[in-house]
Structures are given as structure tokens and as C-alpha cells.
Image (cartoon, rainbow over all chains, first blue to last red; front, side, top):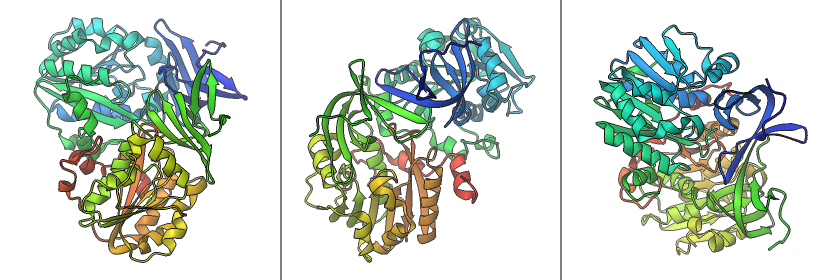
Length: 291
Length: 291
């Protein structure tokens, strides 16, 4: 554990503030109670911070990834939607998801028999399991097989292996950049069974319109069905966040999968609602020249 | 127009930044191109700033109220939902709404014959009509009757006057504080016709849970029907924002009112879905002890 604080963590009037530096024209600063963990892994700088408004946060290279207060929104939305669409999701691949929140949600499904979780940075998993229990649940389900490897290299080798693939990536900078490239989506399509489906986080419809639109178009070109859905994640810039689902065969949601499940954000209505998009997103996805 | 900059507008490395100071533990900073207007009115400090990410913004006492980029989301949601529920909204009262964005949306309805807009601060209206055209549309519809008065005092005198009342208030601090009090909702109920309905912005479900819940409960006690709905407004803390609708008689939406309307955010689906809430909001609204 370092003593020296990274530049994005500053002390002002005896108070500690994390200022996300990812955006040029918008900075969000969080008042921090304590630095729980701070260390450099082979891939990125990792911190667990205890914040006043959001509880404990995972911060990678200065960018908030998930928090105790709203991490479940992202994890529930990226997990329960695909697992309510595939009728028999037995073998699951999670790419990324080092905070273990997605794996925790997937484990809520008895139908799931095996989960491969491919995360490049074992330090993130170790730290989150230890210090970010609200998100990771200190995951210890025997169905989860941790593979500490490069997700891109891992899926390249696969053919017709999985029912569902969930790509829980960070922003397309640093380690996660390759997880937004066309060749990666092609590998995913190949790695899925003939009736498989995939979902990825596709960034902000407000701040990353090009990235969102590009990943949507790429998935659309490869899969029989593509559907974009949204959720509101307070600690992500702009609040509104997008997920893109590509499916070879299934697109109907089985709402019985959602009913009675222990969730904080999703319910039957939210899953019904999440595919209804603001007009500007439809315009963006349909307009060839949209920026 | 002042030369001196207010404290929440700071220059760093030759760049101008607006840092919202409203929240104790979360600060959002916007990079600013130009100060278009800065002045003190009888009620508050008013600025129009040209920002890099959100275009021109109205900033009152250092808090972003509306912007060129996302102002329409708020204005469309607080206007088209009630005007699609009331079958014959001829006489409308807007309380607050100094940026004129709500009045602009209301004017899209031919069925509307008369709009009283009661705004306490005539300076806000003057400045927005002049410098925030994207939001105000430099509103000049003859149906709009501007009344520069205290909204609370104004509605107290009324009895069975309006079909729809829209409360477009700022946060419940400063001038807008009284617009969240029980006696004010009672006045609104009295000011509405026997089949009238009202809608107000009821703050953030994430950061202002008590305020949202309290205004919901107060409206619930007075009206036959109460419905809370949400929208995502990127420049509001947490993104997710709530609106509460109280109705004496009507609650069905007439979607023909929405179809084919020129809007950037709302469409039939969004209006259908906006009443579907995340599970934590249902829990919050139903739990008597929720904080």
C-alpha cells in the first residue's frame, strides 16, 4: 500500500477529494472519508475509497468504476436482462467485471451451471473481494472459474462455447480499449453457441455518442437481433448509460425470471421499460451521419 | 453587468470553471468558454454561461438550472405528460419556469387558450429570452401572460381557476423553498378546477429522497390520484430526476397528444415508461420509515 497519493486525489482545507480527470470539460469531485486501498498493479492504478455520498468506490486510474450505493444498478442491468432472454443460460462468460458484481448477480440464477470470468487484472479481483463487499459480496460461488487473462486473446480461441457472454468493461481507454473493436465482436459471435447472446456496456448516450453508435452498428452487423437499453447510474457522467445486446436467436424476455428476485433496481417494469429510448437515441442510431 | 466574478466561477491555468457548490460531498465542475451575462437581481445571482459540453447554461446562485443541451428533457417531461392526461387543458398556470422553456412547450398545444406564468424574478425571464434562445425560444406567444410575483402569494388567492398547474421550481432553497410546503400544495389544489391536475419537479430520487417522498406524500393526501415519474437530466446531480403528478379526476394518457409532436426526448414509449420506477423508489415511497 502506497503512502503517496495520486494526482487526482487532493487535499483541500483538510478534506480529501477525488476529482475524476477523464473528461476535458466536466469534472466530478467526490468528498472522501478514507483511502481504504491504493496501489499500482501491472495494468492500472487501483484504489478503494470510502466516499461520503456513495460509500466505498473502486477507482481505476482515477476513474470511478463502481460504488456501494449505485454499483448494483449497473450489475443488475447488465446481468438480469440477458439472463431473462436466454431460455437456458447454463454456461456464461464474463469478460472484465473485476469487481465481481456481475458474477454475483449471475450466481443468483440456479439454471447457470458454469461461469468463466476472464479479468486481466487479478489485483482488482483480490482487492474488491476483500474491500468492496457491497459490490463483490466476497464472491465464493463454486460455479465461478476465475481466469486472469486478456479477454481479447481468450475469446479468439473459442468456438461455440457459451450461452451468454457479458462484457463488463471499463471505458475504452487503457486495458479495455480492445474490447470495443470490431474483431473482438467477431470473436464474441464465434465464441457463442448457435443460439447464444451477448451484452456489453456501450457507454454514455450523452458523452460517448460515437462509441455507443459504433458498437451498436458493429453488433447489428453480426447478430440476428440487436437491442440497446439504458439505465441511470448516478456516478457515471450524465447519469444515463447504455447497454447493447446482440442475440443470434432469442429476444423475448421471460419476466418470470425477474419476478420475486432479490434486486434493488430492476423489476418487471424496469426491464420492460429499459428498451424504450429517448427520441434523440433513436435518431442517433438511425442516422448514418450522426456524430 | 458585473466585472467581478462570483466565487463559484474560478480561473485555473487560464481556463474558466463553474463549480456547483450546492452539495457538500459532490462537486460538479463545468469548463466555461464565456460569461455571457452575470448580474445580481433582487432575488438571486443570475448568470448565462457558455460551456464546452452543454452549450449555454442558466446559473442561479451558482447552481445550473437548465442548459442548451439537456434543458429540453426537463421541459418536455414536465409539460407533455400532464398535457397528455388532461383531455381539455385550456387554462394553464406555470409557477416559476423563468427560463421560459416550459411555456414554450405548453405553447405547442393548440388546445391551450391561456397561460399565466408566475415568476418571481423578471430579470431571469428577460435574460433567458435574450441570451438563452435554445431553451426559451425567445418566447413571444400571445397566449402567455407573464406575472412577476411570488407564486405562493399568487395561488393563495385563487379558487377553481386552472385546468393544469405546472410547478417549475428551482431547488427548495432560497426563493423556491416555499414551493415545497404543505400549505402551497393545498393552495394548488384549491386553484385547480374540479377536474384539474398539477405536476411539480420533485427533486432527485438519489440525493433528495426525503424531499421527493415528502412532496409525494403531501400530494397523495390532497389528490385523488398521485403518480411519480422520472427522466434523466445529465446536468442534475445523479442524472435521475423525479416529477410528481397530482390529479383530481384524470390519469389516463392520451398518446395521440404525443404522436407526431416535435420533441427531442419524449415519444410515446418514453411517456408510457416514465411511470415505471426502479425498485428502490417503490420501496422508498411505500416505506413509512424510509429516509
